[in-house]
Image: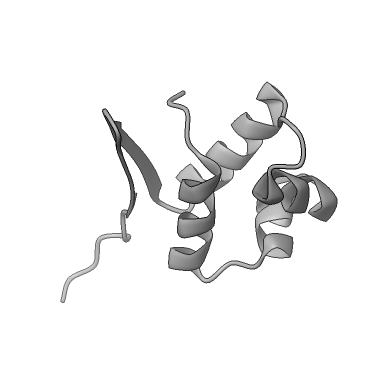
Length: 81
């Protein structure tokens, strides 16, 4: 899995309109774990980062990194317009 930053996670949450509680539910983690991760109070474990990334991926989020540039893309479900 590709690594992502706290800033990308916050941006992804904003794009999706998710609260920290909604992310915690989607990732199967405690609210405190998400809050601490976003505040960068401690280093998140690999298990925590994986759970967060999987939750975002299921919601259509893609994280990008190219050199010093980082980004977030939301892949909307396909529908006929």
